[in-house]
Length: 324
Ligand code: SF4
Ligand code: SF4
Figure 1 (tube, rainbow, N blue to C red):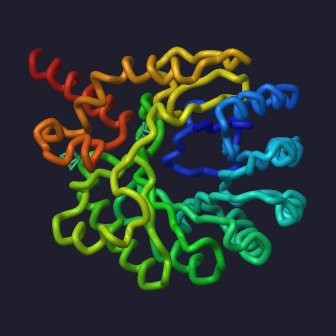
Figure 2 (figure 1 turned 90 degrees about the vertical axis):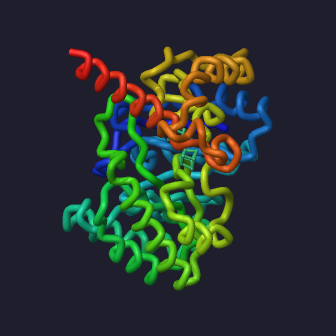
């Protein structure tokens, strides 16, 4: 329910970074941890998602993890795996889960890639199945073989997260372009077939659309995907920034005035507020054809809400030009 950004700086270079416009070098003050724990408890949370930037760069990262653990909140750390050796050694002794966002070889410098492989080896030996790998599709022709090579040499959880890179509202990230989505559907399908053959189970992150795949591809993979094919958590997942401001999904943070987390913050009311604010867009879906599609809002969300807003904006701009 909560995505806590413990810092907004990073040592990675993901071209599609969802947090790009929020990277302003801030970090969570440890004095706010008690408040966060109380809020999490009030909402019966069992896990505490720890995000960044790159969260392991926070100078008090291990204290943050420890604080959550001591309060029976299982820390789930979302990391790029480019952490320092001292942090890596400590992580091995900690009761956590990790979700690692891994990119294709070309995204890293030689030095960073060497560090990545070294860290993955250690994490595989120490945390093993407590770690999941995720990959994001953001442009056609990504070197997916380099991801398969990593899966071959590690011993992580069998589930592999597959994401379609969503746009931030200011469009500063390299997100999957609308015109590339059919090709990306094909490449995701091919990737799924390859990881299934190696014994892995794919699951989709939010924003995947049913019609990215053709009928025979869908038929072929629908029972092999863990969880639903199309889902989204656009405002069910609250983002909490290091300064304790709150927004819906980070891709939408610029759309809506941020609220401040307080002891009395009522997330049910915030949810209703977001729901009414975004209602006109959730009713649209990414594509013109969504509104007439019999899958819409049943087994397909119509894609990422941030993408819907952008697609709609592009149409408006196009209409303006046409008019002139
Ligand atoms: S806006 Fe919704 S669908 Fe898009 S990335 Fe965020 S949570 Fe996922
Ligand atoms: S709801 Fe929209 S995105 Fe989903 S399958 Fe139908 S047309 Fe495609």
